[in-house]
Amino acid sequence: MPFGYHLQAAAAKVRAKLYAECEAICLQGGYHEKMLKAVIKEGGKKGIEISGAADMGGLEFFNTIMEQCKGKPELVELAMHAANKDIDPEEEESKGGSADVGKCIVGPGDKDIALVAYVPERNIAKVSAVDWVKAILDKWEVSHKAIQKAEAGWCVAVHTCDAEKGEFTLKFKDSALQGGINYLREKGAFPDKDESSDDECYGGDFEW
Image (cartoon, rainbow, N blue to C red; front, top):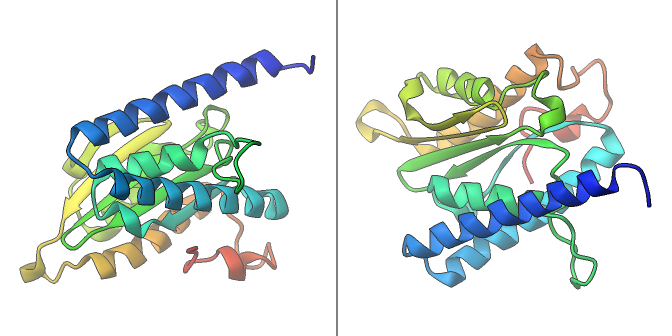
């Protein structure tokens, strides 16, 4: 049996448990099953894409947008769990598989915009999920009181935009991508343009 197999299996069980708990919370919150299915599908699809891109480019952190979450933080958390879930070899289409990659998901709605940052334990010393989210909130000039959960490996925030102040989720989601990548570059966790020819694919407008 390969070295580390038991540790990997235990981690997979934890991920599955957190995923199931989050889905149950969303169901109890009154979200329709079809809506949750769309969120899970988007999260799983982007998870496999992120995993593949990381394998090719060697990147450890990504910023991306998930439109199906509609600005609801609990749905963005569900999308993150779907992106992190282990790939089921029996599924016709592979989904998830990106638990080794740190991610910040931006979930814009009509008025609310939610952020969820996840950092695997092995990379917490390099990047803090809380600081990652705070860097984006600072770019928005939004109080850190928007943060609902704050752990080194998992951070959740939501902000309600005020149209009278010129705040709109369309503008915020674009600045979130750039602010997130700027933070990663400051931490040496994202390649500069002169360091990688792949930067055009994963740069400030990085979005799948």
